[in-house]
Image 1 (cartoon, rainbow, N blue to C red):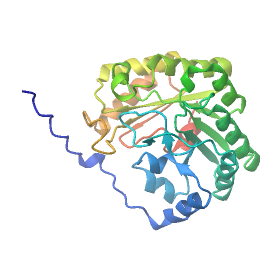
Image 2: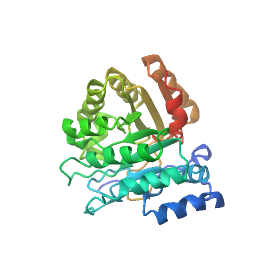
Image 3: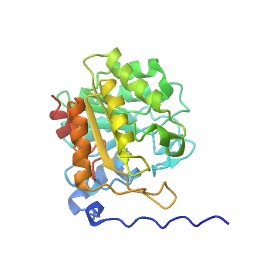
Image 4: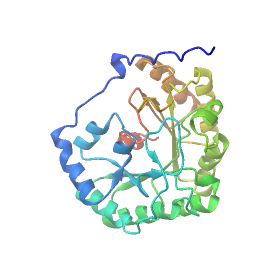
Length: 291
């Protein structure tokens, strides 16, 4: 007889955000609908959505809202995606211009169905944004492109200000929560970005609460720093639905302060850690502190 699964952990008060969507967020939502654009803020059920939308900023998610991978922590739909929309880069640039963004963050679903994993679409969008907003900085948060160096090179050729690829979790947990990903491949991608373009600022992030230990987190931070990653973010995993990986533990604010201290001791140029920290949250302010 198998034992019953343990009941889910109670969400502590300090891990509750629950901000209702402010009326000041409505203009941005209307613009997104008008331009037929997707944001990771909405698709991934980010707890910071109201905060960011109210300030007139969002992380644009390219290539649709259907992902070819199924990660145990992510609420983005897994389904057969639609063909790339060649007009999307121009629409993203138009939205960014109308929002008067000084810092534009671009991410995408994984598109393993495309020969280059969507890399050319990233590059085209960076170029389109730069054309409309020459003074704006652009950060890209990419999938791993299955480790294809040509795909990575095409993104870097567009000269993003920050190249971000999230490691997300510790190697032991990849089979459970990132079954179609590969820990070493992700590290190699970050190392290759720096090798191909030595001046390129690189960034990665990971979640805690998926079942890892503090010792494993320390090892991942050391692995990232060994690849010359400049910026690292750490945040609390919050289960989006009952169908996703349960939360193994809630790390209090003091725990994130300890992680940040460890990361700074390793030599990262910028560290951003906290319960509600997400890779793209306050990205402009985080990048501005890079030594």
